[in-house]
Length: 496
Image (cartoon, rainbow, N blue to C red; front, side, top):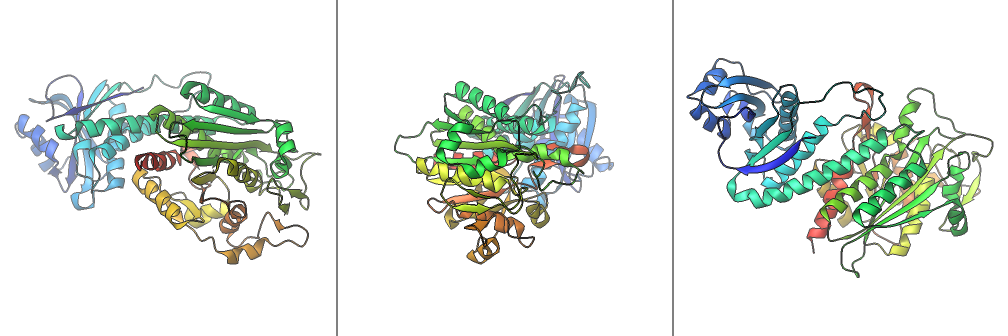
């Protein structure tokens, strides 16, 4: 695990580590690189003039035994200076970490954190350098019988900033580490196989968080849910041998009278589709259908590490969605905790059935705002791909606040409509409404379904079906939207 520290001042020459500096396109040394070039009597300039480093974004060049400078100097391409923004900065840091991990250097000094990145301050640059570095180094090997390799040699990374910004940068380091740790937890939970990461396992992880960060925890069992009337949630759990859980974690470090922010995460630990069975291809990826729940636990870990002076309630309704003789059938009608009845036309539209009871449950906390997070619809993937999460909200100010947190954390969202016109698609001849509205605007009608249970508070819904995990060669959970949720709560705490 890489240890991070912060330092101010010019690049320190000498030593056996590695100095990391940037080069803009075409062949322009950054300020830190130019300072190092002076100590090296123009050696870097000669390398750049020869064309060995053009400065194209994401490229790297490792120099050995640079005279008067260091045993290793890593040049990182930054692209055009006029275009250098959040994306290019994060890509440069990621490229630097990948290159450093391929060397034998145990220590490195990163001077990319001194670069001008739009209007971003030192705290932002440090926080993002830390999260990107941890993301680049993340590997999920827990289930392998043997370690594939000994891992990178890099053990210490010094983040260099202007001396005047040292105190501010320290806050960025704290935030970056907390977000990175929260993302790692969310990734681990998502990547675990569904025979390990069951509803009971999630409840156990929540108890560990509660004990470590002194949070209050409540775990409702099936009988508790039946007494309350959570028949919508329980209808999803009917076909599974795994008992459902309803997890409530409370971080209470704000004033007692401060209304909490509630974050609600969909926790389907494996989704077969139920009786409306999914196709076999890539069904293994349905272990990721609990990534909303994982992001709630990851965010609470980050919040707990920072001891944010805010009240947060994390709610995780969790179950499997399995076929079987006791499973819910298409055509069944259930009564939700709110008293509204739902005709289940498709058992694979199960996420909204567990979330609706959770949204009704959080009314008792009189929340200042509620955000639910769910891998809810394939339609959202078609609409937005794998770049932005879908954002729906019944309050414009809250929507802007969530979107702003997404921009600051580079965990971006795009707002989608929640117009009453779409509610027409959910009409049912036999119940108050149906759980699906047909193929058109599937992500929108899913959000409209949830909106029927969020009328008593300011509410936002994040559809993360396209952003919670990656497929193919890089298959695995991404840890999103832990950065967005954490930034949202940091901003809320800061407003005090």
